[in-house]
Image 1: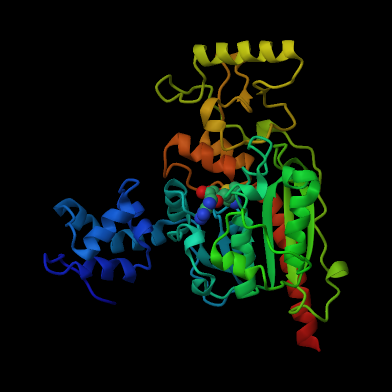
Image 2: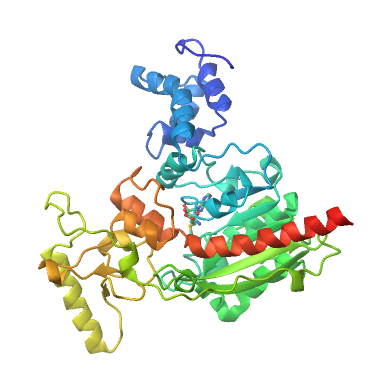
Length: 435
Ligand SMILES: C[S@@+](CC[C@H](N)C(=O)[O-])C[C@H]1O[C@@H](n2cnc3c(N)ncnc32)[C@H](O)[C@@H]1O
């Protein structure tokens, strides 16, 4: 197979570029895999132009990278080499792949991933054996492989209650336009987008209305110049999409996960591709089973955990701080502050990306053990989000994995929506085969 590089000669900086390109990596992703810091992309560029040379240690690491990536594929619990997939999909703003797994389980093959956070990339690589591409704003839509389904839980800070509610005027809010420009170029048959529930009411509903209008090809005007958009995205807006689109707010606890997480899901089908189908009546949103949930179902038994291993019970100082803040909030008449749950609670609050900070949104009561409350363990976070038991949760630090699960999705809900979407697509295929 391919060339082998026993060493990197002093004269041939091209070899580094050649190895990197052979591995299909951008400079930033290459730098992330080598554990370079924030200037990593520049360092790699310098190696490639001969401006400076990597240390002997880095050369060894570079030479070992191919094997390392091969090993990652072999060891990844969710690596999929599917040669004859039912459909091909791309995983944008992929995080740790919470949207990917259900679609993969339904016979789909992931042909492209984008996620720029180097810690999320590490968890993703460990679990899927694929190193995500980085910053989507730097990737031209023409370089993205053809696919049937586009998946994207695009960043939500700009729309969420916790954020500044800036929406499209915040670059994080403009990530929708990255999706839009890819839809314009690739015209996948279907898409699933996910965001915080607040997107629905953001800017008195105008933000979601704009998004829907663009996806349906019903938008009139150009975006104001002060909205930070790439040239490709701005240009793509002059093209009209033609998707049937619908959205729904779905709650994790209604789909069997003991978490009160509500999210907006937007599903779209290309009306040109499905021109003969009555999508409106054939696509059915999943019906929530609404079985009663119980927090105890996701808890680990930490009764006998040693003090050294207990990284979850919060310190006296933190616990006192939580109680003090809660008392202050109560006095002011608002309900903020920590929330305690136990095994018998029906569901927890929504786990957020800030959970690693102080865990205040979900603390587990440990009165019966005579201890302060504790945070969830990484495995419990995984369960709360419906991830399978063999999902690897310790490729990164505890702080990072909390952030990653907080940012992720509840897989129970994604599975149900994915089922509905794939059923619709299959139904049309069957009808076409009969005709
Ligand atoms: C709400 S999270 C999505 C999480 C994902 N659905 C999951 O299951 O883990 C949004 C993700 O988009 C990533 N992101 C934000 N801007 C990006 C960009 N320009 N290019 C690539 N990824 C980006 C963030 O790092 C974050 O992980």
